[in-house]
Length: 347
Image (tube, rainbow, N blue to C red; front, side, top):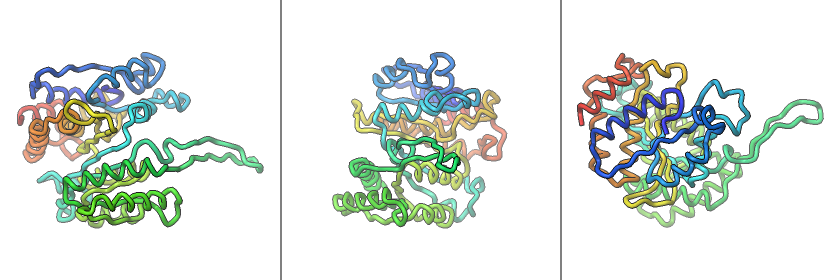
């Protein structure tokens, strides 16, 4: 699903990397999602796209978002495609790694000695919270308009994402930070209580808690203290974008959205760069495809069980960066195609 804006451009480079790996027996299916799907089919997530998604082992997703669709009612806007896929396919766990690549410290807004210590994973719950709660607008008795959105989590929703986070921490440095706002939100108090309950099953993982405002501060003050962060949908959306700037650019961050469905070699998931459709530079060859390529690496690892190939792709990206290959987002002038060429060459 290439999607909108720069989505087709960065996805094309990820597919070139996939082609260079020459994996046997791989079948690719193209499907429309987002603004392009609305223009072609009258809906951002057509039924034929859902059918294709359900039949696949994994989804490589570009980006959605089209200014031409801003005037549509909310259910028909491009962004509903990704929200719909997460909901329809049960993709409740979003994994967003943020690692400082060697030699890239100067691209971070942080001091080099602070930035080089960044190696963290944000585990974000995707199917609950204020994004999926009841919402609307109303007129108050005095005539003022009021918008409202309901934030809520059921304990089972918190429990399943907590298990994902604890297992992820077991495979890393065995440290987990749960981020909430339990001092003012009842939703967050339940979140904290359930995470503490789940922690009893993972005695080998050290658990601590931070309020979201303090977590945001600590991400720029001392990001090296974090190993795995688990948090809700709203807070995770904000903190993961903040983490991307700590490592230098949103154009370097991949993501995986996983559920409970398994494949022959791993877990079904949707993989996408976190940068969005960037319509202001679409079609100009300025987009950095590295996040899309790194999303492909996550797909190879988590859904296809191809760890050696995933590691090769990540090493090729790291080598290209170390050799000074940089797009405009990192202060360079390399085009989308040139960056793709560089990664393919280093495979």
